[in-house]
Image 1 (cartoon, rainbow, N blue to C red):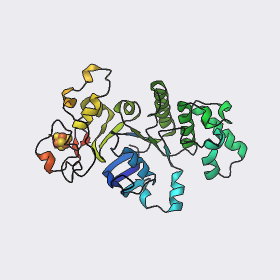
Image 2: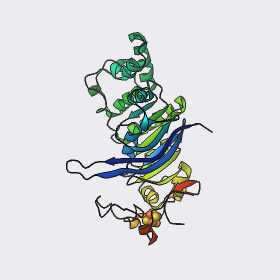
Image 3: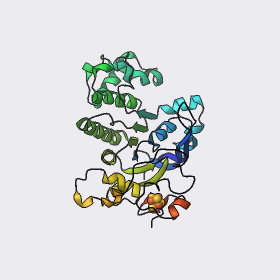
Length: 320
Ligand code: SF4
C-alpha cells in the first residue's frame, strides 16, 4: 500500500460578503485522503466547492481544518515553510493562456521554478532541463524562444504542465485543466497527465465538472454538492453502481458507451434545476441536496446525513 500523501480533515472555506455578494461557505467540513502516486477526481457542478478546495490546499484562500501533506499541516505553515513546501505541490489552471506571463518567452516561463529553487544551475543547464521537459509534454526546441500568444490552448496547457512538473512535485492539483479545450485536445491532455502521473509517481487531484473526463484519469472520485461531500468511491464502483442520488443524476448526463451500464433515467427525470443560493436555500440542518433530490423523504429535512461506508465507498445519504 502506498504511503499517505495528503490527509484533509474538516476543511472549511468561507468567503466574506463582498460587493454584490453575500457571505457564504464554499467548503463545509470536507475530509479525504490521497495516497502517494494515486489519483482522486473532484466532481460537481459550479458552486460545489471543488476549486475552493484546490485553492485552500495551496493557501490561495483562507481556510480552516487541517491539510496534512507528507506529515505537515499546510494550513499552519509559516511563509518560509510554505515556500519550501510549494516545491512539492503544484497547480495547473483552467485557462492555460491566462496563467502564462505574456511578456516572457517559454524558456523563461518553464525555467522560472528552476531559477527560484535550483539557483545552482547554470543558464545552459536550465535551458537543457527545460527542453527535456518540453519534449516530454510534446513540444520541442523550436518553441523555446516563442511567446505565449503564439500557442494554441492545448499547447499552452502543455507549457503549464511542463512548468508545474519542472521541480518533480509530489502532488499536482489540476483545476479544470481541460474545461476550455475541445474534445480531441482534451483527450490528448488527459492521456498526457495519466502517463506523467504513472511515470513520475505523482499524486493527482483532478478537478472537473463532468464525470466523463474524470473517469479517464482518476482511480477514485469524490462528488461534491454545495461544499459538502456526497460520495467517495473507486472508479469502478462509482461508474457502475453509484449510491448517491446526486452522483446518479450526474452520471445520467454522461454519454454511456456500454448501455448495460446506463442508469435509470427516472433518477434524473424529476430533478429540478438548482435553486439560487440564499437564506431559504441553505440548509442549517438536513441534506443540502434535498431540494433537488427525486428520492427525498421526511428524514432528509430533519437530519444531515453523515458520510458512511456503503459498498466499499463513502456515501452521505439517508437511503438504505
Ligand atoms: S439524504 Fe435524502 S435528500 Fe439527501 S440524497 Fe439522500 S434521499 Fe436525497
